[in-house]
Length: 184
Image (cartoon, rainbow, N blue to C red; front, side):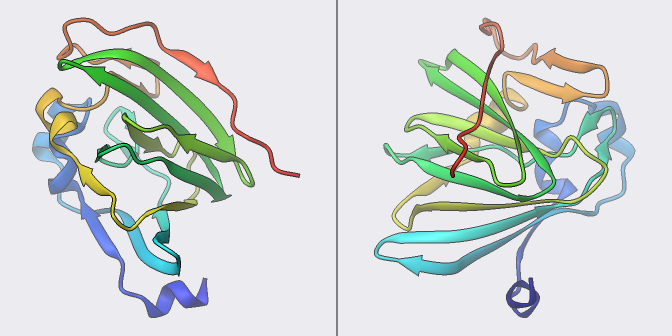
């Protein structure tokens, strides 16, 4: 953690993610604040980059705090490792503007989740304590936030009342659940 404190993180503000939130009524009147922190390039190996993201435990109105959500431009995979706390990764694959596959993976400290190529994803912190997660991805990979912004978020929102379907999508498949990878 001491290495992190010496680095300046990219800070994602509430004003930058309001368009992808479930509770738009809350978002209209909420004061702007720092939602999460991304420390990019902690390590580099070949063309891979290791980042760490910190997401404090809190609610965004009725919804659990989350990342903005993005897809990768190109066929890049990404590997996430939960370092502290718990995460729910929501993965969705779009085709012609509609979701053709969507699933969630609940992961705790030490668990690994692989984001397959062509899947957009959101990381959710379902606890009141901080989530710290790491990721490895190609330095050539670029993030595309526009699909999530255009549709007002992912296909589902995780709220204090459970999973709620995003009504901005014409058709959303049933949400499936998968297990994280365990390394021994």
